[in-house]
Length: 99
Image 1 (cartoon, one colour):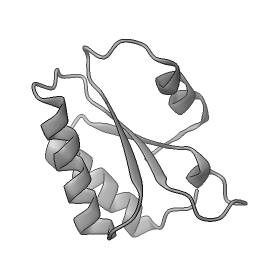
Image 2 (image 1 turned 120 degrees about the horizontal axis):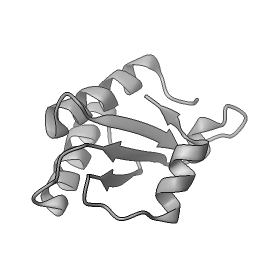
Image 3 (image 1 turned 90 degrees about the vertical axis):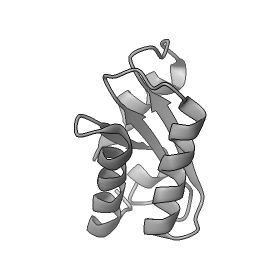
Image 4 (image 1 turned 60 degrees about the vertical axis):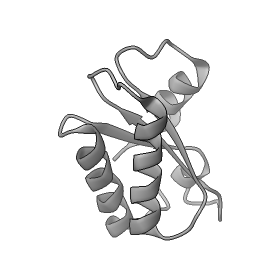
């Protein structure tokens, strides 16, 4: 996994501050492969609660991450209890690393 301990902590803190203590985060994509270089940070944020305003919530996650990690390319997927199944969610679970 190509994230530092401090980056992982910042991501987890963001998840809990925006989504609550039960929030989970999965890193997926190229950053899970130590042999690769560069690439954006692909994150799946999950919560067992319905999210009232998804756009506002994703925006809050993104702003918090940029403040903590610096200006970098971050892709965010948000899954709550109302999110229907999707191939990208399956891929993230199968290939990702839970932080």
